[in-house]
Image 1 (cartoon, one colour):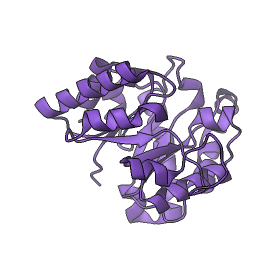
Image 2 (tube, rainbow, N blue to C red; image 1 turned 45 degrees about the horizontal axis):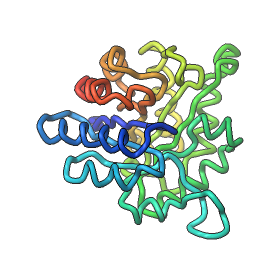
Image 3 (cartoon, one colour; image 1 turned 30 degrees about the vertical axis):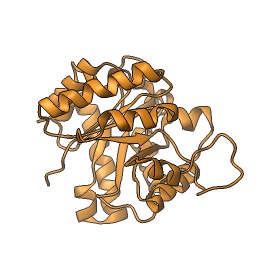
Length: 251
């Protein structure tokens, strides 16, 4: 089944207003003057969302948040709800990134609740899963990812509103990358798990992104794999040339 590739940039906690807006405007200009065979999404820090939304308006680049709270509103100091992101003009949100799972002790149940809030607010949700180096060395890679799919996928998930991002924790920000064959093996196992949970049609249509140090040099090889439907890009998303090269690598 043909799935349109999604190239998503996770800017993490980087960029101030001037740099972030300039990066977004650069990408928007390239989109308007060129063409890519993929959907493009950028997820800047909360402080940059409005400026980035304005900078990419009309370019075809979507904007998303990096996290959301499970509640619509309330006494949650420092948090942002999915409804607030939607109200601002965002199209998507990332939940369950390994840095959230590690630094904020987020469980599969917490990730699922956030994902369900995102769907309720009308956002597309990118649900992140992935194993640590210790888990990979222990031969638990497929088991860990299957368990996280079962525990983190929101009720109501469809191929249209939900994306899975497989991000081997040992490859995030380290410069280490799973080989195309290693990544494909896990992506295929994730899709198999989705078939059991959602059915054949939804599993075949749902996009599964690779999120472990994809860059301008390795993107083409990774994106050529049958079950890799795009990338959740970290460091390379902060450089317009690199992010654009990744987008142009889409088959």
